[in-house]
Amino acid sequence: MKTILLATALLSVAAVAQACGTFTMGDISIERAWSRASIGTDRPGVLYLEITNAGAADDALVGILTPAAGMPMLHETVVTDGIASMPHAASVLVPAGQTVALSPGGFHGMLMGLTEALTKGATFPVTLTFAQAGSVDVTVDVLSLRAEGPGCDDAK
Amino acid sequence: MTGLRRIQIGLWIMAGLATLAYGALTLLPKPSAQTEEAAFRPVFALPDGGGRLRTTDEFAGKFQLVFFGFTNCPDVCPTTLSEVAQVMDDLGDDATFVQPIFISIDPERDRRLGIDAFTQAFHPAILGLAGDARETKATAASFKIFFAQEETPEVADGYTMSHSSALYLIGPEGDWLRQFDYGTSAADIQSDLNSRF
Image (cartoon, rainbow over the protein chains, first blue to last red):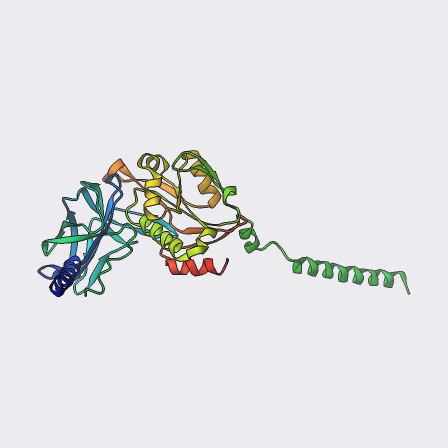
């Protein structure tokens, strides 16, 4: 019984660690990659994450690719005088030594043409392409439809 | 007393009266911007997901938490719906005093995608409404909100929507009470509501 409990505890820890993983390529590291459960596949999914540039030179996220969506794209929510619009973002600048977040109400990946519904508790891979660092593969956690943040702070 | 002197006194009296009258006019309460705002009563008459026409009158006596958006929106709208869902959960029994209403500003596509599936996924209390183009325009004008279709060739269907992103609080008498700007926390909305019950 004790062994089972211990095993369960270890598994949970492993699950949490994996759920809030860090993915690194050169000076760029990605943390807290999350998405929301989708309602079927007709509406776009979303991608949020944090990018840290530990290097001495600026870099920029220039593309996202994922088998989870046929048409993933970078967008930015801009609220001007109370009006929200969502222009396409060609790239997201990550200045040297800084952390930039794709987060609710700001930059985000818009995952159009979902290949299957995103369900809470699932994960999916995304390849991020940076102008300098090249490509990095990250695992994205699908949280509840009502999630408002990555919920990883305890794991850090 | 000469005639001239009488005229002089008469003129002074008239000048005094005029001054009093002017003073009274200046000091009289005028309808202020605030009273005008309180008298502003936005209305809607829009079909729900089942096609039944729903109007403002139906919610008399309740606080209405009204917001505008579109279901094809990946970022702002789910965030606002999540906030509203959280408010409804946190209100507990007081939730019966509040009717959250999501009004589509992209009604044709939202009716096709299903507005109920969207609102219900966040909270069963949220009523989703989607009219036709004319009804939607009339509602937006009544609430004094902005929305526009933005041609965006690279996205699905070739467009996205921009829209007023605040939450509007309508009182039990139908008066516009205030707005909560996008990003106002569920806790702040809830404490404002609690102060009004």
